[in-house]
Picture 1 (cartoon, each protein chain N blue to C red):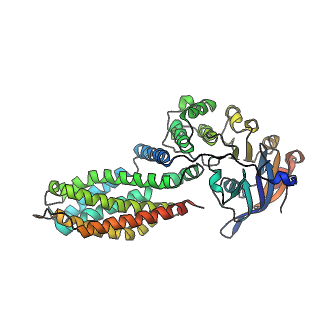
Picture 2: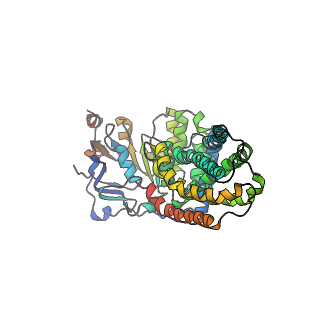
Picture 3: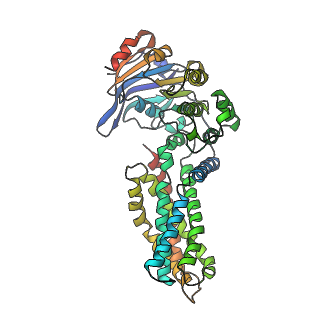
Length: 249
Length: 225
């Protein structure tokens, strides 16, 4: 059935023009979103403590499972990065959950704000989570498993961690936004995220390996750093291009 | 001038038609009240008008913007008060409103004005999860008018509110607010009293569409049988 309350005259049918609303500057929107994200995490402590605890527990498990007091080289780099990756998945899975459960998406979509603001805020939030995770997990790894001195490796390792983090942030934000609207979001986050992050683990582990070896304190191989950088750039652009569509109906 | 013009609007969820063949016009400053049983399409209609859902057929003009093409120009023009308060439980009422104020480019002073208006200034520093449902609804009302929108989309706006709270929020979202309003309700007597146009939905179709003056409460009740 199609019906009219009162058939309007033709001139009445021209809809009223809405006065324009100025878009909120991107930086201010990102700051507001980021402040909200960090406040919610500080109050709930749902992500970062779980991620950190998982990483430390995993290093303890490795310590006993390998029956070795110390690891180095490829093995050390592999253990470090695989553990960080699995811990990151915990944070990635929860990145958009509060918004999905409490109507945050709708509130954001109704505001005169570029959707990129949400992408930038979420990516920065995930980066903050990873930084805190590494602040806890890397020293724990040095104390529980690593044979060579962590102090010598740290300056170069920080660069590798930064490049690895950017890759995890790019893929993690995309995967989390994709998974949160599905019923199997916890499973989907891991199923989509882990394969996409394999190149990050390979690149970061290979770049870290010489840093975590006895008697080898040279710089990480440039080609692996370049690979990580390229991966970060490509996935950063992909996420930037796709994010708007993920928020659409 | 027309604030809303719908021509044969349709919206589906998969194979199921949530809205079908809805046509109506609503003048600026008027109130359209939407009745209908659960699942009739009321919330879907509000979400289409709010640009949160795309129409799948027909023409939709809201405040002069054609949807979905010009949805962007409606951002900040619509106040939506739905079943979800769109507020974060771990944040206080003030923090929630300041967050939304920042997203809408609204000064923080307006947050304090609205906290006063909904009678929650004294509880503004408490996390939302510690407030009663009625109090959360009052914060949601403040959130929906924070940016002074010309169009209000209200889904059972007085749910969980006691009579005193209804009086408090009436100047903000009631007929005296002067805004164009689309109100979903099940309360025939109260809603008819503030309606200019009545739309009755059943199975996503317009079963009733007339000026409110020509609609009796018994006709509304009939929609639910």
